Amino acid sequence: MVDDPFSLERAGPYFSPPAEVEYWDGWPAVPPEDATDVPASPRRSSRGRRFIRELVETSVLAILVFLSVRATFGTYSVEGRSMDPTLENGEFLLVNRLQYAKLEFGRLGSMLPFVGDEDGTRYIFGAPARGDVVILKDPRNPIEKDLVKRIIGLPGDVVEISDGHVYVNGRLLDEPYILGDWDGSKSKVVIPSGQYYVLGDNRRNSSDSRFFGLVPERLIEGRVLGSPWPPSKFGTNLGVRPTLADEVTRP
Image (cartoon, rainbow, N blue to C red; front, side):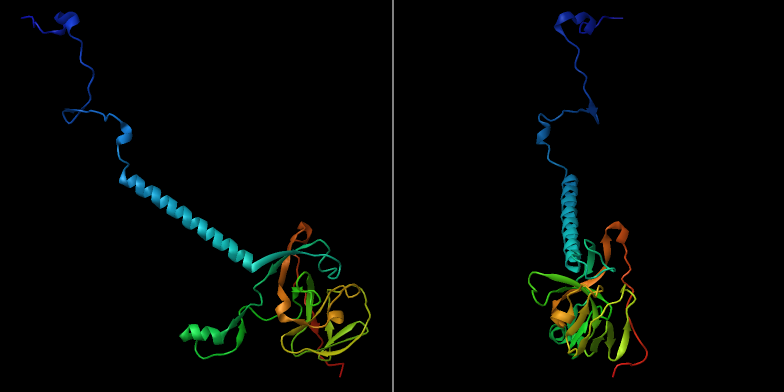
């Protein structure tokens, strides 16, 4: 065998072994001089923009839900004993502010032709009803003070109080939520349209329509749904409602 004069064994110090080279498809793979010069993948950029868009959309949706909930529901705290024993001093209340919202068909029809020519105003969820516990502005000081009372008389009713008994249209009102006897009398009141007669459940210690008169509907802020606090009062049943006697006993 003939010695190769250019073999590595005989080259001595004049030749060094070549560095390991990675080949791609038969060609040396030469890494770029600066990896930062490599442009970002279009697919990766598109994915980042989609993530940002979804994040913004989720944030906007969360804000809208929060604002709608704030506009619909409110929390109040009870101060005083006028609604004992139904509601106690210091109790927190959850109130539906849109319970008595109205829709004006005349104005709506001018914007939406398919509504038709129907005129007038309609309640979306229902009108204030006898027995509803509501938050209202104090008619004597509507800017600064809120009250919590129970609706007793509706528009068109005739309300009379005689010796601690409430009569509506000559029929005795049975109120199972009242504890103890109370006295006092008030002459008949005919309730006009858009007005309500309200009383506190604690008749011995309540400033209500017996003293400040009827309450305009515009001062009613919402209906009390229940009590989230304290825990012992959670889910308090406000469904106990007054009922009218079958017979008329007051002319």
